[in-house]
Length: 418
Image 1 (cartoon, rainbow, N blue to C red):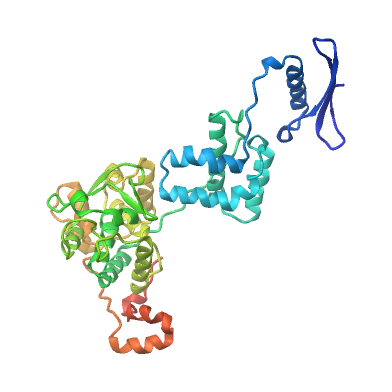
Image 2: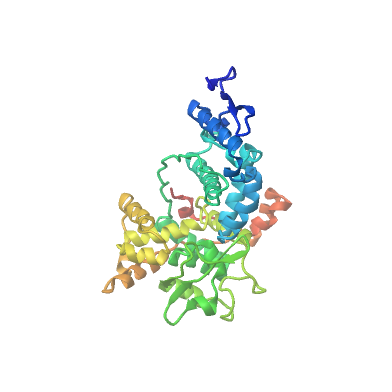
């Protein structure tokens, strides 16, 4: 019997064939490691016979690189660099490869990665207690690398990689009172950072879009519009997420914040004294400080964008209009905010409702209500200078700079949001 199971459990084959010149040759081999079946062993025997009897018919086999050579070589250059992946995507892929894919598959040839290896790898991620969403992100990067190897005909096919069905987490926006407190706290940081907070909370800009916004190219104070043409992330300026430009109308609050900036209207809107862009580190430190001063949980810039979308949905904005303002590629992304507004409906403060009184145009009505959210912001004061010295003693030398920004919360600042 030419095909049988060996003592180690692998399917093997052994056969004697007669070549065209009359000589006899014994052929031996086994099924591929990733497909250890009788059928696979029989196919391997037929292929071996073909190579032996008719070598001229067999195409020269391509040298299959290891996963490390492939991922850091052609795949990285042609897929990641060639397709101009965003800086966040590049950083994410590199991190996933170094932490997870390289240790598991780096030394294996591309043709040695089969369903068994994938299943074992997924099990190891589960054992490390990674979330299903994180596991999906890791497997998605692995899948792209293997499928592109199929596209360029380095391997015949890619093993199927099943992803978990994960429900998208619910967004967490600021409510009306919390948003008003954020605006009040941002004013203490200065006009530039107050304008940055308004760009995120009054127009829904992402933090990278705020840093890259320019006066002449992107801001029209006559038409009262903001045009998002680019974003800056990890020090690199690229097109916005989704690679599409969008134009957003200003609220009155945003217009006042921009007009209050004491700068020649050239270059970046939110910038350092020398005209350079704000860095990621500067922006991250400031938004956390603003949250602490407001007596609220520390959250990032994107929470302001969530507040913009959710509040607009609560005010009854047309979802297609909101999709355009927020720059979503698909309407289902926008509907997340609509569903959030429906499932967690809040009573709209009377002052916000009154701001839209008499407005007939639906878009102007929404903008009037959005711009009125900070009208009744609480007063948040900086700690008096007399108290700074005692605060420094408690914090130590490293806390001296923090003490300058410490606050004396009023009664309302003790109330935190969910």
